[in-house]
Length: 184
Image 1 (tube, rainbow, N blue to C red):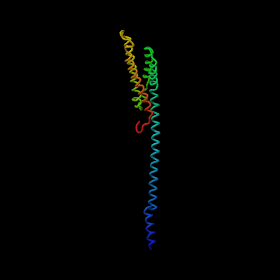
Image 2: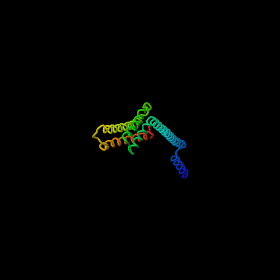
Image 3: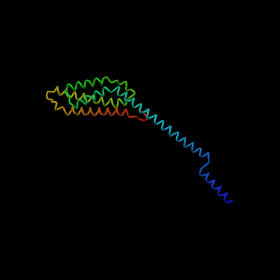
Image 4: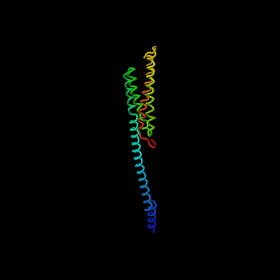
């Protein structure tokens, strides 16, 4: 009789520790359901990432299409200033930049406000700095007591500000290519 009680106790203890087949099935189903939810979430995250990357590429392409010539033209002027330009060369190059600015199709950017704010505004500000420098230089020619040496500091300041704005525009373009989660 003692053997029978011990076996019933052992068997009963083992069953309560292991649970019933129904409980084991339920736990297995819960684990499988959690794994399925995790896989679905990972797939949704991959789709969202691909969508954000595609949107970022589209933003960059749209911005480059609208602003590319203007950005290239003003960057070229900035680069040429590093080797030096005469007043006539400077104003000719600045005229070329102005033409590319005037040709920007801002209607293309209705769906891309980040291009306008991150690229267009800094480029326009750079152009304005170059125009101010041209005016300073021109005013000096009109003033017999003015020398190029006396305005070099003002010109260099305007050109440095323009260069900084051109770098900001490049960074803005690079930022457009960075996928964002949520809104673009």
